[in-house]
Image (tube, chains in turn brown, yellow):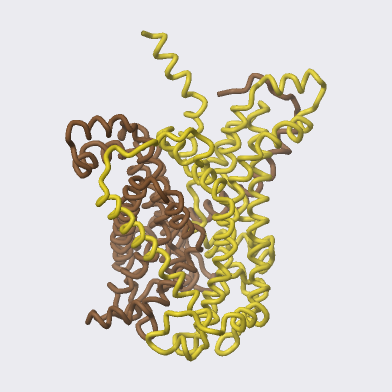
Amino acid sequence: MEKRARFRSRWLPYALIAPQLAITIVFFFLPASQALYQSLLVQDAFGMNTQFVWFENFQALFHDDDYLKSFRVTAVFSVLVASIGLSVSLVLAVFADRVLRGAAVYKTLLIWPYAVAPAVAAILWLFLFNPTLGVVAHWLKGLGIPWDPLLDGTDALIMVVIAAVWKQISYNFLFFLAGLQSIPKSLIEAAAIDGAGPVRRFATIVFPLLSPTTFFLLVVNIVYAFFDTFAIIDAATSGGPAQATQILVYKVYADGFKGLDLGGSAAQSVVLMAIVIALTFVQFRYVERKVQY
Amino acid sequence: MSESATDRSGSSIAGDSGKRMAGWRIPGLVLMQLLPQTWRKRRREGMIENRPVLTFVSHVVLAIGIAIVALPVYVTFVASTLAVDEVLQAPMPLVPGTHLVENYKKVLGQGVSSNVTSAPVGRMMFNSLVTALVIAFGKITISLLSAFAIVYFRFPLRGLAFWMIFVTLMLPVEVRILPTYKVVSDLGMLDTYAGLTVPLIASATATFLFRQFFLTIPDELAEAARIDGAGPMRFFFDVVIPLSRPNIAALFVILFIYGWNQYLWPLLVTTDEAMYTTVIGIKRMIAGGDAATEWNLVMATAMLAMLPPALVVLVMQKWFVKGLVDTEK
């Protein structure tokens, strides 16, 4: 859509847009093209010797067991975060949608975790799950469940998944509740008159009508699990133990800053950018077309 | 037949193109429901059927949900009121202790000192506040300006500029960490407020949001302003900004939280304790390992780190929800 009423000036629009563009070029395009270029180079750790190697970094990457493992960890992690996060929030939203009294209070009590920094969320759960002094760890011990996220990879993964889900529940809850409340009452009433009970109504009417919201949230949650959970991983486990929680975003950081493997880290950045672009593309093409009322 | 088709598409053009641009598309009804109740007509009058048992179960499930969600924060709060030896016994007590004032005074004024030293948390909170405010106001300002240029002017390369801003949506800082760090360090911006904030200020989302909104401002307003002899900047300050206030407020809430909670970027660009933000400060406090960590003080710091953004969400709930809807659709 275009405006009919426009202003005329030779220089003013450029001046207005200049700050945004300057920052974009200096902090987005320059670094991104650097990453692209660097992904084609091999450099020793002291920066003395640089060699152009075409796609060797990428080849090395996909033959690197650590990298493939990180892919698997990321896949497991994001599937768990998205599925658990969505189911828990859906259950809460469905029940909150049922109660007339106090729905607003429940909403207020459930939305504030959104405000907690991911890193702080990680530390809260780390404290609860700490094998020597954590409260939850103590309860688990009481139940006879062995628990040590500092040494056991599975335990560590469970811990970061819980922290990541906890942080995202408010967001999912808000959108699910809104989706539920936008379903026309008349449909549900008609089904009730026909004798369909609450479970049947949910399965045949509510859930299908909720599919656009669910799909939207699914994409948001996957993006969240891929990229926004860096702080949770770093603060809770630093990718350990034995790389059990090293998701792709964390590995870029670990290899680049700690391992000083610039070419490898840049190549990983490029792979991640490709993933972001693919996800964005999915949003564009399918979010609005495939899932419809 | 054809008339009704144009009608239908005509009515949705305004919202459609921009939403597609911003990437997300969720149904309008859902968006409407997200807005505060006072802003729309309440559509839910009664329950379809009375099932007291199910209603009771609903309350129980919600209460359990809230309890689980609140558990970590409650334990954190309790830990922040205990003496260090009380926290270290397993299991720690689950009733608040008597050291609340002492602990908070200590972290705010001195920070932790036993195994890792840190700057006073008061200083860190100041850093966080500056970071959050500069990011929020910076993003809003440059986005308002560039959206105004894109909507109200035609100029060569306008399309290119638009796409350059748009593409940044696809480049989260996490995927280009190393080169961005290098740029910032080459510019001598490490350990400065500028380094903490400026690289995070460019914002495609906010620009799109404002572009969307400007497109809904009636053309007559701009025409009237032009006839009255008002220049573009006069129009911008006297008409566009006042009309954008609700959007600015909503965006501010989201961006304040975003800025306050930044992690990776401040972790990289700050090495000087006095420049740590609160979130980074906590992470550094637990770096010394289990036995030596003064968990009661760390947890007091965590409470302090959560407080400002949580307050902003709760006090400005209406704007917060609007902001979520606006920025993520």
